[in-house]
Figure 1 (cartoon, rainbow, N blue to C red):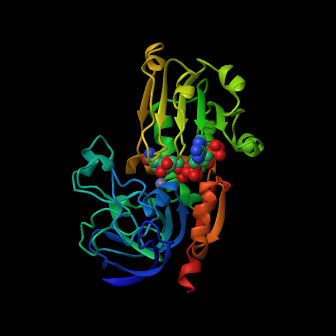
Figure 2 (figure 1 turned 180 degrees about the horizontal axis):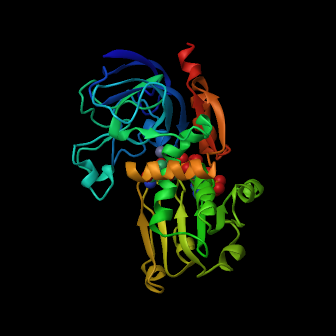
Length: 352
Ligand code: NAP
Ligand code: ZN
C-alpha cells in the first residue's frame, strides 16, 4: 500500500480539496497507472454533492473521476496485455467477479461490480474506491483500456465515459447512413454523441437551450440545430426521428421529444437527473414508440469505441484545467459554460 495525492469532497456541501489516499500495492493482475489527465463528468458533480442519494448514496471522502488517461508504471506478474510505458485508460468500472463478462457482455451488470469511485473496495484498501482526481491508480488488467497513440491524451480522457456512454446506445440503435438522429443537450456527453453519430454516417440534429452553441454544433458535425425553447421549430419536426439520445443532466420535458419520434422510434436516456421525469402514456402508444435507458458500455465495447475513435482521429473538445480549478469548473458546468468537457492536467497535482 502507498499514499497518493488526490482531490476529495469531505461532505456533500464541501468544496473539493487536496487529500492523501491509500492505493494498493500491485497484485498479480494489477496495472499501476500514472494519471496524466482526467475528464470532468457531470456524474462527478452529482456524486460529490450526493445528488444520487436515493440510488447510490455517496460515502465521504469522495474522490471523483472516471475518465482517466495515463501511462503504465508497473504491472503484476500475471498481466499479459500491458507493460510499463503504455498509454492506457480507465473508465467507470475497476473491478467485478471473475464471471463478469457473462453479464450480457457488460461488466456493470455483474452484482459484484465496483465502480471507479464510491463503490465498496473489493481489495479492502479503503472503505470505497477512489477515482481519477488523483496522481495514480491501481486497476485490474481486465478494466484497463488501450489508448490509440495518435489521440491527444487530454482530449481522449472523456472518451472513457462520455465517449462510450454515447457510442453504445448509438450502436444498439444501429445508427448509420440514412438514420435521423437527435441529440438533446450539447454538453460533454452530447458533443461526443454528435461527433460519433456523424462519424457513423447519420443525419444529426442537436437540440439545445443555448443559442450560442449553434455554430459549434454545426462544426462538431451536426446537420441541423434546433433551439428547444422555440415551439414552432420543435413542432415542425413532429414524427421525424428514428432515434433520440437524451444527454440532459437536469429536469426537462421528455414528452416534447417523444412527439418528435417517428413510428417505432426510440428515445434513450443517458442523462441522469436527480428527479423522475413524467411521461404521458398516449405519446408513446400512438406510434409504438419507446423510451429506454443506457449505462456506459462493457469493456469490450469500450475498446471497440476507442479503436473507432483512433481510426477517425476523434477526441473530445476539451478545456484543460488544473486540479486547483475544479470547484470553479463544477460551477461553470452547471451553467453549461464549457466547450465541451473539462480535462484536468494531473501535473498540477503532482507539483504540489
Ligand atoms: P454536461 O456536460 O453538464 O451537459 C449537460 C447538458 O444538458 C448541458 O450542456 C445542457 O445542454 C443540458 N442541460 C443542462 N441543464 C438543463 C436543463 N435544466 N434543461 C435542459 N437542458 C439542460 O453533463 P454531462 O457530463 O454530459 O452529463 C449529462 C448527464 O449524463 C448527467 O446527468 C450525467 O450524470 C449523465 N451520465 C450518464 C451516464 C450513463 O451511463 N447513462 C454516463 C455519464 C454521464 P444545452 O446547453 O445544449 O441545452
Ligand atoms: Zn461519467
